[in-house]
Length: 67
Image (tube, rainbow, N blue to C red; front, side, top):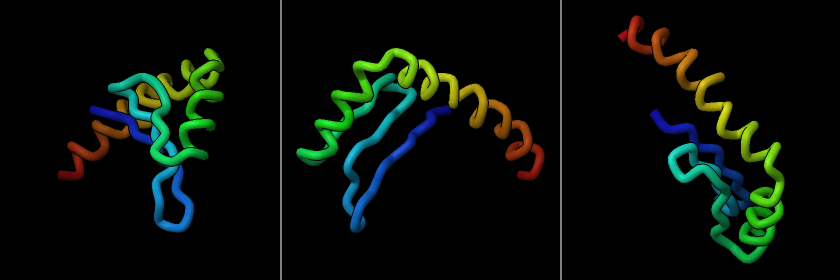
């Protein structure tokens, strides 16, 4: 299971957090700047890493039951 949070503007992906990578990755000049700032903040990274447990692992049983 992987948690991905992407930020888009005008259908262009600027920045993405992936739980498998464990940090933000930027895809544009603006996105790289934001990713660098967010990656410096340890509380932001730990909050995003916790989202996998909070969101994904909580809902996976519901999805398997429905299928």
